[in-house]
Image (cartoon, rainbow, N blue to C red; front, side, top):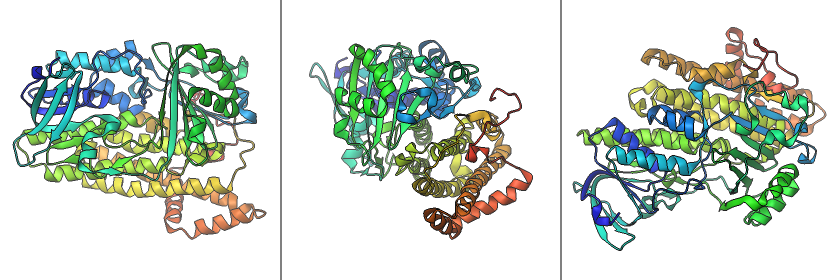
Length: 572
C-alpha cells in the first residue's frame, strides 16, 4: 500500500495493527457499522504465523471477548488450542522429578462456556487483518506513523504517515486510538508515562517441538491425577523463590517457554541470552532444562523484557484520543491478564467513541471510564507487586492462587460476562462495591506477604490440589455465565463481594489461629498481635464469622492437609 491510498478522512484512526488495535477496530465496526476506520501498521501483513509476542495464553475474559464479542469461535476452534486452565508446580527436592512437586490445576475440563485458549499470535493477527478488510475497514500495512497532531478544538486530529515507497499522506481523524504497544506513541507525546512499584524481568523463547510435560514421568499415579484432558494444554508454571517459568503449547507445534523473575532476587544478566537462560534453568529447573537441551537445535527466537511493568496517568480522553492495550498499561504476564485488559479497555473505548460520534458530550463518561479502568488495573497490580518472593512457598502461594482465581471469577469476570464494565456509570451501587472491594483486595495481598515472610513450613501439604476441590470454585466459575437481568445481577455482584470478604476473613482467622497456637515462634506471635490490631483484617474476620453460620465454607482450601471429598468424586 502507498500512503496516498489511505483515506483523507475517517472517524477513527487506530495507530498500530497488533491484536489490541485490530480487535478494537473489529469491535467498533461490528457495533457501529457506519463508522469509518483506518488501522495503520508499520509491519507488512500477513505476518509470519510464528510471530512471537508476549500474550500467547488467554483466560476467561479474553476467551469470551474473542469468542463471543468478536465472533471468532470458528477460528479459535480450528486454528488455536483449547487451554486446560492454569497449572502450577511448586519447587521440591531440587526440581529434578516433577512427580514430587506440589501440583495445582484442573483434573477435568472446565465447561466450554468459560473456555480459554493458547494463541499463536501470528495466526490470530493474520485472521483479524483479513476480517477487517472484508468488513470494509482500511488496513494499511507497511506504513510508518511520523507524527500525530492532536487538535481538540478542531473537528479532526491529523495523523501524518509515510509508506515504504516514500509517499507521505495525512489522515484526518475525529478520534485517534494509540495501539502501538510498548512504543506508546501518544503516551510519550503527552507525557503520561507512570512508573509502578513492581520490578520484574522476563525472557522467553520458542522451541519448534511440541514438548509434552506429561511425558516427564511415567509414574501411573501421577499421570492418573488427570481424569480428562492433557496437562500439556494447560498454561504450565514451574514456580520457585522469586520466579516462575511458563510452558505454553501452541497450535503450530511449537512451545513457548518464558522465565519471569523478581529483579531483586535474580539478576537479569544471568538470563538475557539463550545460553545464559539455559544455564539458569539448569540451576533452578534442571528437569525442564534437560528437555529443552534435547531440542535446542529447534530454537526459533529469543526475546527479553527488562523491568516490564508500567502504567499511565490517563488512558481515555474526551479530547478524542485513547490508549489501547500495551500502549497504555502493562502489568505482568502471571495469570495472563494482557488480553483481558485489552477486552475491558476496548469495550470502554468503543462505548466512548460510539457515544461521541452519536453527538453525546462524553466528558463525564471519559472520566468515569478512566476511574473504572484504574480500579481494575491498580487492583490487579497489587496481585504482583512485592509478591514474587511468595512463589517459593507452596502453601501460601497455593492459597493465593485459589483466592486470586476466585476473586477473578466473582468480580471482574462476572462484570465482563454481563457487559457491565462500560455501564458502571449507571450502576452506582455496583461501582461502590467494586471500589470497596479494590481496597480490601490490597489488604489481603499484604496479608499474604506478611504470612509468607514468617511461615515457610509447608510440610504435609496435599500433593495435588484441584481448583474444583472446593465447592465455591465451580460455582463462581460457571456463575459468570448466568445471564442475569439488571436486578439479579446487582444482587449477585453484591453477594459475590460479600462472599470474597467471607473467604478473606476465613483466611485471616485460620492463619491467625495457627500463629497464635505456635507459642514457640516469637515471629509468629508478634505477627499475630499485629494482625489482631489491624482493623481492616479484623473486620473481615467479623464478616466471616457472621456469614459462616448461614453459608458455611470448609477451610480445606487454606489448610491443604488432605484430599477433599467431592460429590462427584472426580473433581468436578
